[in-house]
Length: 95
Image (cartoon, rainbow, N blue to C red):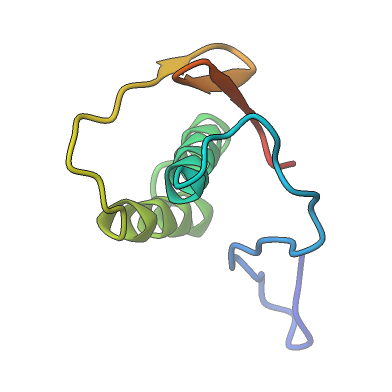
């Protein structure tokens, strides 16, 4: 995507029109957001060179989301090829 100046636009955007998630326990929204951002960062590293602005931006956004988490316990989740499983809830990709 390019902006009006013709330079690439690497900002991470979140859509606001997504339906509410079902099956996710109340209070886990921030964790779900972090896990989706983590998945996006991993996808960027599989797709682009490590020094790419897409990779560094994705990691920075994921790190900011992680530092804002308010958890007082270990965060345990499982990763499958298509989803991340938090407890018994599957968290699918956001795209």
